[in-house]
Amino acid sequence: MAETAKSLVNEFNQQVKPVSLWADAWKRLRKNRMALIGLYVVIFYIVVSLIAPILPIYSPNEQNLMHINLPPSFKTAGELAVEKVENRIARLTEVLKTQDREDLKKELESQKAELAKIKEEVQHDPSYKKVYILGTDYLGRDMLARIIYGGQISIGIGVVGTLTAVLIGIVIGAIAGFLGGWVDNLLMRFVDVLYGLPYMLIVIILMSMVPSGSNSIFILFIAIAMVSWLTIARVVRGQIISLKNSEFVEAARSMGASQARIIFRHLLPNSLGVIIIFATLQMPSFIMNESFLSFLGLGVSAPGASWGTLVADGVKGMELYPWRLLFPAISMTIFLFAMNFLGDGLRDALDPQSKNRT
Image (cartoon, rainbow, N blue to C red; front, side, top):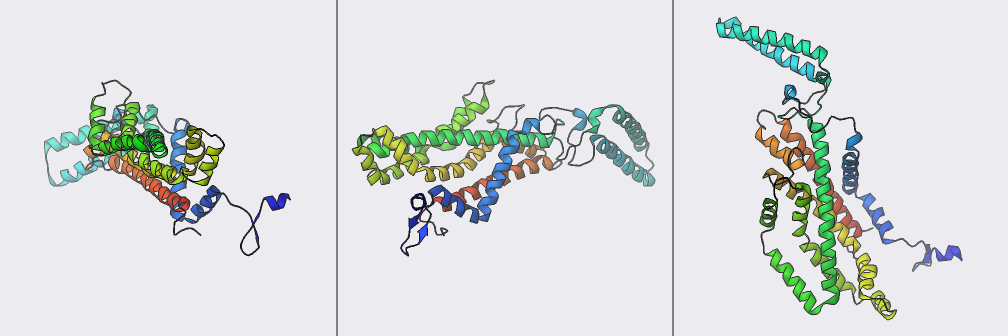
């Protein structure tokens, strides 16, 4: 009997095991190589962001004016400093072979004295033992540490902002779709009015109204979330309307279930697949919006850093110090591509009409 309860009979009179929606979706998702790669990349980014305080990296806000704009290297800061001065001496020596100039001779002697001074400092200053794999910025801060901690803030804003927008959209969309009538018309006309307003302009106005010294990170994701719930509200409304007259809903009504229980216990769980897809596709836009605002100077306040502020700082010196722009931009781009691949894979896995179903 137990074996019979766990299996079903198909049209060919064969015993088959029932498979849940989520188990079936995971099975299909594993066949999508790009979505699976995206999932692993996203997990890696999130894990690194969470364990950043215990990673063997330098403090993201530690400044060292002797290590300004060091290039990416596996050499120590002392070796790079010595190498930099030695290159200057070599260039001056080559020039003096063809030009007998007193000013160049004085500069050469000055550089030799500077070299001796740096070599002496390297022997006694432990900061010269540091290795900056991704180089340093204009204040001598480690780019690797700032990218990791910047990712912590950017991903955090994306996650919290997305959850906030999804929560608001679910509540408004579910109420509008289930109750219908004048409630639906009122809420949807309100959504239409907000759709007609310039989205990013509203966020910029909200951020510009924040007084200096406030918690800019908290205000940032609130400002973005306040105007990002419109699409999910419409999506959830459509799902609720398509499901509210289903047999399982009528059965719940006949058993005396309240409207709130029908919405949150029966209808929303059956719309969860669409909501998850929306969340994974919405999160990259949150991170891009945060980066855009930070680029304009309306995002994360110093000394904190996000991927957007790092890119903004890198643009200022991209011709002389390209690594300050390239590494934050590449890190952000990889994560955004991974989220999009994962979102596309979830859409195919959870969509019952998908051509990729097998």
